[in-house]
Length: 508
Image 1 (tube, rainbow, N blue to C red):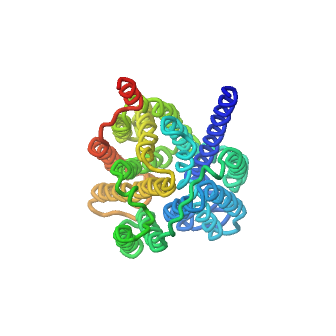
Image 2 (spheres, rainbow, N blue to C red; image 1 turned 135 degrees about the vertical axis):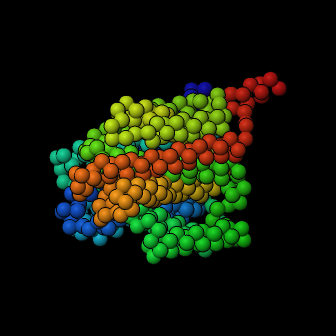
Image 3 (cartoon, helix red, strand yellow; image 1 turned 90 degrees about the vertical axis):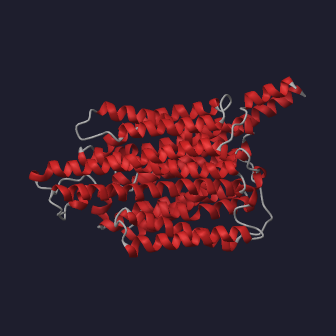
């Protein structure tokens, strides 16, 4: 009997580890595709004769598909089964990767990228739900730490992998590389995640809720994306943002009235979950805005290659991985409030260090900022995820996971748009002041640190103007993380750690 129980326990551990490996690979490839495309854009522009607007949507179409469909995928997962919808998302992502690699035109590539986003939405929406199904609460923090760490590595590895592939192969290889990862992930999920582990929900699907939230998220994301290109343009930005805001407000009202709402009341009434979503949003505003401007500083202003810039991110990815693993172990000794608050504070300190950079600052300053920010985000991401999902029951885990990841996607889009727009305005104002109030046609490139079209006589003024915008932008990112610190202290109640709870139970 004891031998059988030991064998079953060993088999369960192996299945959980295999499932975790599969989910980590899925998270890795989704995050990889966020950044790997950037380094291939010049080649795509040349070979497919793509305009600037088309290039922007090669990146933005992926983000749009992710943001708009995550809630729907979470709801479908709770009804049809987490494993089934997750597998469908992986297959769609893989097929659309093939379509992207074979795309004969910019329009076909953009459509394939939107399809990748749709498949990725299912993966992001349900990865945490499958983890919740597979791992008991006392082991969940460690598993989430691995999942967050590997996903973060995928984000940072994109420019490195892309640079290496493009050094010897065609641009299509940045999409072909997804296929072996997807195939291995599908096989591992089929082996390690039994259908019974995925819950089903007999409640009818809230179709009005799905339509409202999808349209609202799509319109808001579209407005935020275009805001980075045409700040405050009424037709392309303000109208979509206003429509998105109104539709999302209507969605909130509908959820209060619906008999079977898309987001169950048990999720909406969980203050720790709602607080985690808000902190996720504010922290990713800072994270995406920081990476955007630091990349502009190194690649455009200093002339670094995409590969060199990506390699520098290892100084942030490595401590991110270590800290994410530590977060799982620290959760046994410290409350999520302590872990998340410490992570947000360290992230703010690291971003503050990066905000001091100029074109003449020694790289060691950036290295210190990378290291500290990496530790901070390595703590806060799994910490937020753990506190958000710890009290969520299996039947609504897919929906909760979707809402949490939607807040992250919106935060990333808002960070690129709002931080980018404000930084651009600061750069243009400084550039105009240096030219007695007159900006030139070169003010647009100057806002991104690209000084190639600027006359040599005004190069110094243009450099100073970009640095002004850079400092303003990263100051906003630092402030956003400080807001996250305050929210963590206010929202997360002090609770006993698992170790303290066990000791209390033993003493009774």
